[in-house]
Length: 331
Ligand code: 13P
Image (cartoon, rainbow, N blue to C red):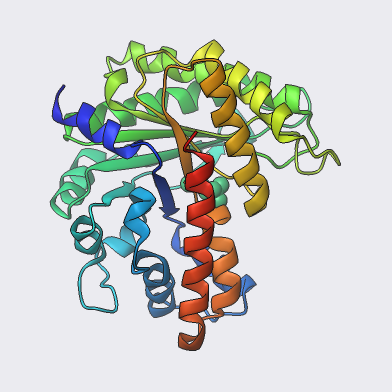
């Protein structure tokens, strides 16, 4: 086993998962504003500190995904955030894509940018302590119109190019082709799109000589669209999600993590539990765990309101959710 294989298995260690604390400046500001908090660089630092400095999180988290701004910011105790995580045995991961732009052939869909100059940025991130990275592609469903095959193919190609560069730089890539929950599609349509997307991603990964044993897949669960008026049972979500994964993900991939995608915290927890139970029954070959942003941070953010007085109750809510989610992943 080389270093990258070892880091990949640490990321999906039993009972642990990832916190995605890597909202861009724009998304972090939107979340702060939605909770009545005036956004600023210092407020974003405090927002990160609320989660990253919560005592005891290392019991549940193997890694935390950071946005570039956070790499150079310090926790309240004066320690740089990546060092703080390393001191607590939590791997610092960095989001390295630079967001999405319209796909020229189909401008209502997107491709992810950030490959130009990536090797230089990767060298810098590794020096800051990062040992793993994330790249998010966005796949939109709209009836039979979207996704187009070009959107899937171009995003898959870029994910594989990114993965190759990251492994060359000595870090473990996390590949996140997010199939959006937004839309009025059915669960079966989501399942089919996840399958088509993952098939394209692994074909591109093999074409570009990426080491499949040294990457982590971050995927959506297969759910009915958020505007479909349908709420699936955890059993339905587990069945569709496992079918999509078993049909497409090679056996030698070291681990799969799920995004929450806008599901409520309890829903993301219950669905993860049903998926891990079914994976256990079906003897799935990979460890499965969580890599949530909203489902882990939402409750604490609502309690915090940007005030020092609420830090301890917000951290208690965060820890309680972490415990539930980690328990759901620990079948
Ligand atoms: P959510 O869990 O809020 O979907 O975020 C996960 C993520 O990393 C999005 O890029």
